[in-house]
Length: 398
Image (cartoon, rainbow, N blue to C red):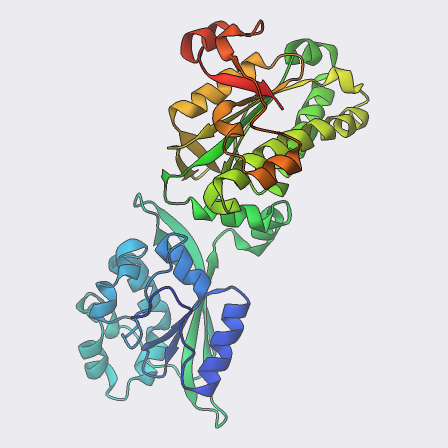
């Protein structure tokens, strides 16, 4: 078994050439030799099966449909012998039988017993070079999702079969995947993957919301207000992504984002990124207003910035959407800070400001040693919820 390192290339030159090309292309692919033993798995398929950021172990030398594979982590996590394995056997069985020198008897001795009933139904085929077929994959919760698999033969310089590649893609197809990827940021996708497994992660929290949105919605046509909301959301998300943050949920006209210390290098860097994103979004409002035929004064955003030392951050993926969220008292406190930042203020907590180290503070033009704070409950703009839930949280303008 191999650990976190990229799988070593196979000894066979033809298989090694294919394996290297597939890994560079970031494909989901397995490579097996002429005897159908695993000789390579790409990094991306290992990450997907291992639940990022961990790569699954490579079962080198194990038969692709053997009993050891059935007990491997790969099958325990994402596949099922009674469904996935049987789909593969039905589709690729003719090649397996053709490659097994001892015929049906030897194949029956090699593969898992759950495939034995299929062996008598297949005929050997060494003529076709490519086969495509659907296979199911399973989520952590046990729900099935379809994949499309394509397998092709790799032949050596003499034309003999050296092995086989089995490559899969989501059943959504490349048109849909390409559309989604073209509107997203690969760095942000990677950060989302880094929290696929939920856990406690120190982070800066940003809440932003459009002030006086109801009067603006009544003033504009529905189409114009929708366009404004879309432009504002895109601007907000871009500012967060550019600062190295994670876009959280969108609720109404509000935006939530998280800046994880593990993603940007330190707690100080996370606090700085949070403040920079808020400032960038405030600057972007003028362009949003202009493209919406509005004045900058028509679009006023409130900002609440806070620090969460013990946030529980993770990704929630369903059949309808995928988003990052966080739990913790600090999330609720950040929302209360934002609600008090009326008039377009950006209020940051003492917990956040005092995370800034000298260089980051200087870059922001902030001197943490000279900042004075006001308890949230003492602000003239303090809401009833703020006075109830977080009256003692010290904040300042940034």
